Amino acid sequence: MNRTTILLVALLCSLHCATHAQRIKGSDTVLPLTQTLSEIYMNQHPEATITVTGGGSGVGISALLDGTTDIAMASRRIKFSEKMKLKQSHHEPCEVVVAYDALAVIVNPQNPVQKLTREQLEAIFRGKITNWKEVGGEDAKIIVYSRETSSGTYEFFKESVLQNKNYMSGVLSMPATGAIIQSVSQTRGAIGYVGLAYLNPMIKALAVSYDGGKNYVYPSVESAVAKEYPVVRPLYYYYDKANEAAVMPFIQYIESAQGQAETLKLGFIPR
Image 1 (cartoon, rainbow, N blue to C red):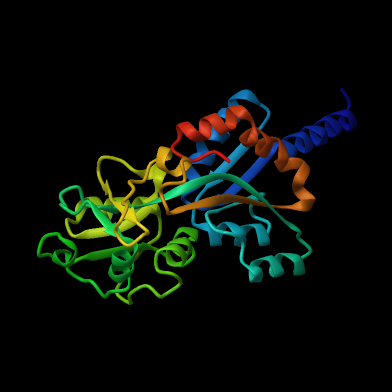
Image 2: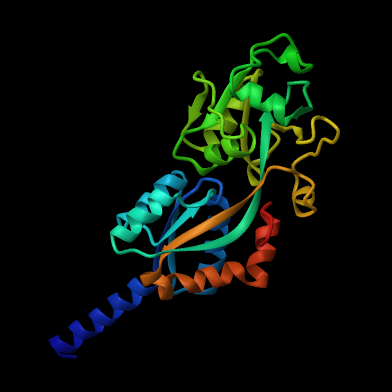
C-alpha cells in the first residue's frame, strides 16, 4: 500500500468516525434518559460514539450556539433571545420533544409533612412561609433549595408553581439535581424539587394539589400518564438543521417503540 492510498484510507476513516461521533449536552433532568439510551444505541451500533454531559438547559443551548455540542438537552423551551442568537450565527434550531417529565417536590424523609397545595409551595419558595408548623409540620425553619438560574427546571418551577413570581432572595441555588438530592437528604428542614426519574429512598416526594386542597396527587409515572399529576412538562432536544443527517439516527431510535419503552422504564413519560 503506497503513501497516497494510506492517506486516503486515513481520511475516509476520519470522515466515517466524525459522522458517527456525537456530543450531547444540557439539562440534568434529561441527562439520565440520554445516558442510558445512548449506551443502548451504541451497543446496537458499534460504529457510533456519543458523549453525554449535563450542566443545565441554558448551558446546552449555549453550547449549540458556539458549536461545542451537536444536540442540546433542555427541560424548557428555547427562549426567543436564544433562537435569535442562533439564527444570527447562521444556525437554524430544530426542536424535538423526546419525553415528558413530572417535577416532584421533595423533603427529608424524617419530615412528617406529606402534602402541600400549589399556594403553599409558592409561599414557601417566595419566603412568605418560613416554618414547617405553618403547613402542619414541626416547629422548624424551612430550608429552601432550588436549581440555579441556567436550569430549565428552575424556570419551569417558577412558571408553574410560582406563577412567574420571583423566588425568595435567600433561596439556596444548587448547580445540579444531585446536589439538591444530597442537601435535602442531609437536612431535616429542607425542601427542593427534582425530576421524577431522580426519586430515591434518600428523599421523600410530596403529594401536590393544584385545586386549593380538594385533590392531592403523588408524583408517579402512572399519575402523569393519566394526566392527574399537575406538574408535568415536555423535555426537548435542539439541534442545528445543517447537522440533521448526523443526529437523526439517534433521535429516531429514541422515538422508536423500543426507545419509548426504555423511556418509560427509566421513569419518564413517553411522547
